[in-house]
Amino acid sequence: HCEGLINDGGKMATRVLQSMGNGLKHTKQGLQANGQGTVIIRSLSASHNRNREDSWFKSLFVRKVDPRKDAHSHLLAKKEDNNLYKIQFHNVKPECLDAYNKLCEDVLPSIHADPEYPCELVGTWNTWYGEQDQAVHLWRYRGGYPALTDVMNKLRQNKEFMDYRNERGKMLLSRRNQLLLEFSFWNEPVPRSGPNIYELRSYQLRPGTMIEWGNYWARAIEFRQQNHEAVGGFFSQIGSLYMVHHLWAYKDLQSREDTRNAAWQHEGWDEVVYYTVPLIQHMESRIMIPMKSSPLK
Image 1 (spheres, rainbow, N blue to C red):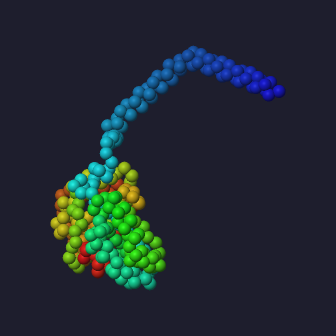
Image 2: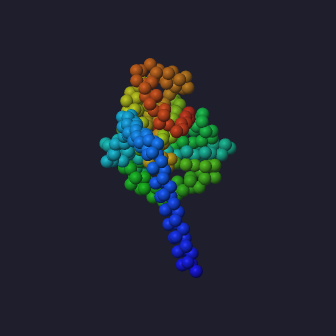
Image 3: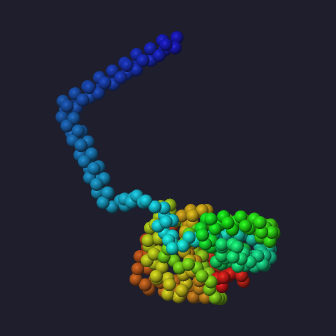
Protein backbone atom coordinates (compact mmCIF):
# COMPACT_ATOMS: atom_id res chain seq x y z
CA HIS A 1 0.00 0.00 0.00
CA CYS A 2 2.87 2.40 0.91
CA GLU A 3 4.70 1.54 -2.31
CA GLY A 4 1.54 2.42 -4.29
CA LEU A 5 1.36 5.84 -2.62
CA ILE A 6 5.04 6.48 -3.39
CA ASN A 7 4.58 5.52 -7.06
CA ASP A 8 1.49 7.71 -7.38
CA GLY A 9 3.39 10.60 -5.72
CA GLY A 10 6.31 10.16 -8.12
CA LYS A 11 4.01 10.22 -11.17
CA MET A 12 2.30 13.37 -9.86
CA ALA A 13 5.66 15.11 -9.33
CA THR A 14 6.72 14.20 -12.87
CA ARG A 15 3.52 15.69 -14.31
CA VAL A 16 4.01 18.92 -12.31
CA LEU A 17 7.60 19.32 -13.53
CA GLN A 18 6.58 18.65 -17.13
CA SER A 19 3.79 21.23 -16.84
CA MET A 20 6.23 23.83 -15.42
CA GLY A 21 8.70 23.10 -18.19
CA ASN A 22 6.07 23.57 -20.88
CA GLY A 23 4.91 26.79 -19.26
CA LEU A 24 8.45 28.24 -19.20
CA LYS A 25 8.93 27.19 -22.83
CA HIS A 26 5.76 29.00 -23.91
CA THR A 27 6.72 32.08 -21.87
CA LYS A 28 10.15 32.18 -23.51
CA GLN A 29 8.62 31.90 -27.00
CA GLY A 30 6.12 34.65 -26.22
CA LEU A 31 8.82 37.03 -24.94
CA GLN A 32 11.01 36.40 -27.97
CA ALA A 33 8.07 37.00 -30.30
CA ASN A 34 7.42 40.38 -28.64
CA GLY A 35 11.14 41.31 -28.50
CA GLN A 36 11.09 41.42 -24.66
CA GLY A 37 13.51 38.58 -24.06
CA THR A 38 16.51 40.61 -25.14
CA VAL A 39 15.42 43.48 -22.89
CA ILE A 40 15.20 41.24 -19.80
CA ILE A 41 18.54 39.57 -20.50
CA ARG A 42 20.22 42.95 -21.04
CA SER A 43 18.63 44.28 -17.87
CA LEU A 44 19.90 41.35 -15.82
CA SER A 45 23.37 41.71 -17.33
CA ALA A 46 23.48 45.44 -16.58
CA SER A 47 22.32 44.81 -13.00
CA HIS A 48 25.06 42.22 -12.55
CA ASN A 49 27.69 44.65 -13.86
CA ARG A 50 26.43 47.41 -11.54
CA ASN A 51 26.66 45.04 -8.54
CA ARG A 52 30.24 44.22 -9.49
CA GLU A 53 31.09 47.92 -9.81
CA ASP A 54 29.39 48.71 -6.45
CA SER A 55 31.32 45.89 -4.79
CA TRP A 56 34.61 47.19 -6.21
CA PHE A 57 33.74 50.76 -5.18
CA LYS A 58 32.89 49.73 -1.62
CA SER A 59 36.13 47.78 -1.35
CA LEU A 60 38.01 51.07 -1.58
CA PHE A 61 36.50 52.23 1.72
CA VAL A 62 35.77 49.10 3.75
CA ARG A 63 38.57 48.43 6.24
CA LYS A 64 40.17 45.08 5.58
CA VAL A 65 41.08 42.94 8.56
CA ASP A 66 44.79 42.33 8.82
CA PRO A 67 45.38 38.79 10.13
CA ARG A 68 47.56 38.86 13.24
CA LYS A 69 50.15 36.40 14.32
CA ASP A 70 50.07 37.28 18.02
CA ALA A 71 47.57 37.83 20.83
CA HIS A 72 46.47 41.38 21.63
CA SER A 73 47.96 41.07 25.11
CA HIS A 74 51.44 40.47 23.61
CA LEU A 75 51.12 43.48 21.33
CA LEU A 76 49.84 45.92 23.99
CA ALA A 77 51.50 44.84 27.27
CA LYS A 78 54.98 45.64 28.49
CA LYS A 79 57.68 43.25 27.32
CA GLU A 80 60.35 44.09 29.89
CA ASP A 81 58.42 42.75 32.88
CA ASN A 82 55.84 40.11 33.66
CA ASN A 83 53.43 41.95 35.90
CA LEU A 84 49.87 40.82 36.42
CA TYR A 85 47.33 43.02 38.20
CA LYS A 86 44.16 42.17 40.08
CA ILE A 87 41.49 44.76 40.76
CA GLN A 88 38.82 44.02 43.35
CA PHE A 89 35.47 45.76 43.80
CA HIS A 90 33.80 45.15 47.17
CA ASN A 91 30.31 46.50 47.82
CA VAL A 92 30.05 46.88 51.59
CA LYS A 93 26.98 47.03 53.80
CA PRO A 94 26.64 50.73 54.66
CA GLU A 95 26.63 50.11 58.40
CA CYS A 96 29.82 48.04 58.13
CA LEU A 97 32.03 50.37 56.07
CA ASP A 98 34.12 51.71 58.97
CA ALA A 99 34.67 48.22 60.41
CA TYR A 100 35.56 46.93 56.93
CA ASN A 101 38.15 49.68 56.44
CA LYS A 102 39.69 48.95 59.84
CA LEU A 103 39.88 45.23 59.04
CA CYS A 104 41.65 45.93 55.73
CA GLU A 105 44.11 48.31 57.38
CA ASP A 106 45.01 45.65 59.94
CA VAL A 107 45.67 42.81 57.46
CA LEU A 108 46.47 43.95 53.91
CA PRO A 109 49.69 45.91 54.68
CA SER A 110 51.23 42.82 56.31
CA ILE A 111 50.72 40.81 53.10
CA HIS A 112 52.15 43.69 51.08
CA ALA A 113 55.27 43.87 53.26
CA ASP A 114 55.95 40.11 53.55
CA PRO A 115 58.71 39.04 51.08
CA GLU A 116 57.24 35.51 51.05
CA TYR A 117 54.38 36.84 48.94
CA PRO A 118 55.37 38.01 45.41
CA CYS A 119 52.64 40.64 45.39
CA GLU A 120 52.25 44.32 46.21
CA LEU A 121 49.28 46.40 47.23
CA VAL A 122 49.32 49.19 44.63
CA GLY A 123 46.41 51.10 46.11
CA THR A 124 43.25 50.71 48.18
CA TRP A 125 40.36 53.19 48.15
CA ASN A 126 36.79 53.97 49.09
CA THR A 127 34.54 55.31 46.34
CA TRP A 128 33.55 58.90 46.98
CA TYR A 129 31.50 59.57 43.84
CA GLY A 130 30.14 56.67 41.81
CA GLU A 131 29.00 53.48 43.50
CA GLN A 132 28.58 54.27 47.18
CA ASP A 133 29.87 52.16 50.09
CA GLN A 134 32.40 50.49 47.81
CA ALA A 135 36.05 49.57 48.31
CA VAL A 136 38.52 49.14 45.43
CA HIS A 137 41.83 47.30 45.82
CA LEU A 138 44.56 47.04 43.18
CA TRP A 139 47.27 44.35 43.53
CA ARG A 140 50.39 43.70 41.45
CA TYR A 141 51.88 40.20 41.05
CA ARG A 142 55.49 40.28 39.88
CA GLY A 143 55.92 37.08 37.92
CA GLY A 144 52.52 36.86 36.28
CA TYR A 145 50.15 33.93 36.71
CA PRO A 146 52.67 31.70 38.57
CA ALA A 147 53.12 34.47 41.16
CA LEU A 148 49.34 34.80 41.53
CA THR A 149 48.99 31.04 42.06
CA ASP A 150 51.84 31.03 44.57
CA VAL A 151 50.25 33.85 46.60
CA MET A 152 46.81 32.23 46.60
CA ASN A 153 48.24 28.89 47.79
CA LYS A 154 50.19 30.55 50.61
CA LEU A 155 47.26 32.67 51.74
CA ARG A 156 45.13 29.56 52.19
CA GLN A 157 47.66 28.46 54.81
CA ASN A 158 47.70 31.89 56.48
CA LYS A 159 45.36 31.80 59.50
CA GLU A 160 45.28 35.58 59.89
CA PHE A 161 44.20 36.00 56.27
CA MET A 162 41.57 33.26 56.46
CA ASP A 163 40.12 34.86 59.61
CA TYR A 164 40.11 38.21 57.80
CA ARG A 165 38.34 36.64 54.82
CA ASN A 166 35.65 35.07 56.98
CA GLU A 167 35.04 38.29 58.89
CA ARG A 168 35.04 40.30 55.67
CA GLY A 169 32.37 38.05 54.17
CA LYS A 170 29.92 39.12 56.87
CA MET A 171 30.29 42.75 55.83
CA LEU A 172 29.89 42.49 52.05
CA LEU A 173 26.87 42.69 49.80
CA SER A 174 28.78 41.56 46.70
CA ARG A 175 32.27 41.44 45.24
CA ARG A 176 33.93 40.97 41.86
CA ASN A 177 37.41 41.10 40.43
CA GLN A 178 39.36 41.21 37.18
CA LEU A 179 42.86 40.19 36.13
CA LEU A 180 44.62 42.92 34.16
CA LEU A 181 47.76 43.69 32.19
CA GLU A 182 49.23 47.17 31.95
CA PHE A 183 49.55 49.07 28.68
CA SER A 184 53.14 49.38 27.49
CA PHE A 185 52.85 53.17 26.98
CA TRP A 186 51.70 53.91 30.57
CA ASN A 187 54.07 54.33 33.50
CA GLU A 188 54.05 51.61 36.14
CA PRO A 189 52.08 52.77 39.22
CA VAL A 190 54.42 53.79 42.05
CA PRO A 191 53.63 55.04 45.59
CA ARG A 192 52.64 58.71 45.83
CA SER A 193 52.55 61.14 48.68
CA GLY A 194 49.25 62.86 49.34
CA PRO A 195 46.72 63.99 49.85
CA ASN A 196 45.22 63.14 46.45
CA ILE A 197 41.92 62.05 45.06
CA TYR A 198 41.93 59.35 42.40
CA GLU A 199 39.72 58.85 39.39
CA LEU A 200 39.22 55.37 37.95
CA ARG A 201 37.76 55.68 34.46
CA SER A 202 36.52 52.32 33.15
CA TYR A 203 35.68 51.73 29.50
CA GLN A 204 33.83 48.74 28.06
CA LEU A 205 35.09 48.58 24.47
CA ARG A 206 33.45 47.01 21.47
CA PRO A 207 34.98 43.57 20.82
CA GLY A 208 37.85 43.74 18.35
CA THR A 209 38.80 47.39 19.03
CA MET A 210 41.49 47.01 21.71
CA ILE A 211 44.42 47.43 19.28
CA GLU A 212 42.84 50.54 17.81
CA TRP A 213 42.31 51.97 21.31
CA GLY A 214 45.94 51.27 22.18
CA ASN A 215 47.23 52.93 19.01
CA TYR A 216 45.39 56.18 19.75
CA TRP A 217 46.21 56.29 23.47
CA ALA A 218 49.89 55.57 22.84
CA ARG A 219 49.97 59.03 21.27
CA ALA A 220 47.40 60.63 23.56
CA ILE A 221 49.09 59.84 26.87
CA GLU A 222 51.68 62.57 26.29
CA PHE A 223 48.88 65.14 26.48
CA ARG A 224 47.94 63.90 29.96
CA GLN A 225 51.37 63.91 31.63
CA GLN A 226 51.70 67.64 32.19
CA ASN A 227 50.69 67.56 35.88
CA HIS A 228 51.84 63.97 36.51
CA GLU A 229 48.21 62.95 36.78
CA ALA A 230 48.59 59.64 34.90
CA VAL A 231 48.97 56.77 37.40
CA GLY A 232 48.31 53.59 35.39
CA GLY A 233 46.52 52.12 32.41
CA PHE A 234 45.26 48.53 32.26
CA PHE A 235 43.23 46.17 30.09
CA SER A 236 41.41 43.05 31.22
CA GLN A 237 42.44 39.44 30.66
CA ILE A 238 39.97 37.60 32.89
CA GLY A 239 36.61 38.87 34.11
CA SER A 240 34.75 41.42 31.98
CA LEU A 241 36.64 41.33 28.67
CA TYR A 242 37.55 44.26 26.43
CA MET A 243 37.61 46.38 29.59
CA VAL A 244 40.05 49.26 30.00
CA HIS A 245 40.86 51.08 33.25
CA HIS A 246 42.69 54.43 33.39
CA LEU A 247 43.78 55.60 36.85
CA TRP A 248 44.44 59.32 37.44
CA ALA A 249 45.53 61.35 40.48
CA TYR A 250 44.51 64.93 41.28
CA LYS A 251 44.87 67.26 44.23
CA ASP A 252 41.13 67.92 44.32
CA LEU A 253 38.06 68.09 42.07
CA GLN A 254 38.88 71.59 40.79
CA SER A 255 42.39 70.43 39.86
CA ARG A 256 40.80 67.57 37.96
CA GLU A 257 38.54 69.98 36.06
CA ASP A 258 41.41 72.33 35.19
CA THR A 259 43.71 69.49 34.08
CA ARG A 260 41.11 67.86 31.86
CA ASN A 261 40.19 71.19 30.25
CA ALA A 262 43.86 71.95 29.58
CA ALA A 263 44.18 68.78 27.49
CA TRP A 264 41.95 70.37 24.84
CA GLN A 265 44.58 73.03 24.25
CA HIS A 266 46.98 70.42 22.84
CA GLU A 267 46.83 69.86 19.12
CA GLY A 268 45.75 66.27 18.48
CA TRP A 269 43.75 65.68 21.66
CA ASP A 270 40.45 66.44 19.92
CA GLU A 271 41.33 63.87 17.24
CA VAL A 272 41.97 61.19 19.86
CA VAL A 273 38.59 61.84 21.47
CA TYR A 274 36.84 61.89 18.09
CA TYR A 275 38.21 58.50 17.04
CA THR A 276 38.08 56.65 20.39
CA VAL A 277 34.54 57.53 21.48
CA PRO A 278 32.96 55.24 18.81
CA LEU A 279 35.01 52.34 20.20
CA ILE A 280 33.22 52.54 23.58
CA GLN A 281 30.08 50.61 24.50
CA HIS A 282 29.88 51.86 28.10
CA MET A 283 32.00 54.03 30.38
CA GLU A 284 32.07 54.82 34.09
CA SER A 285 33.95 57.19 36.36
CA ARG A 286 34.71 56.71 40.06
CA ILE A 287 36.23 59.35 42.29
CA MET A 288 38.05 57.53 45.10
CA ILE A 289 39.64 58.46 48.43
CA PRO A 290 42.71 56.44 49.54
CA MET A 291 42.47 54.39 52.70
CA LYS A 292 45.10 55.03 55.37
CA SER A 293 47.07 51.94 54.34
CA SER A 294 47.19 52.76 50.62
CA PRO A 295 50.66 53.26 49.06
CA LEU A 296 48.96 55.69 46.67
CA LYS A 297 48.10 58.47 49.10
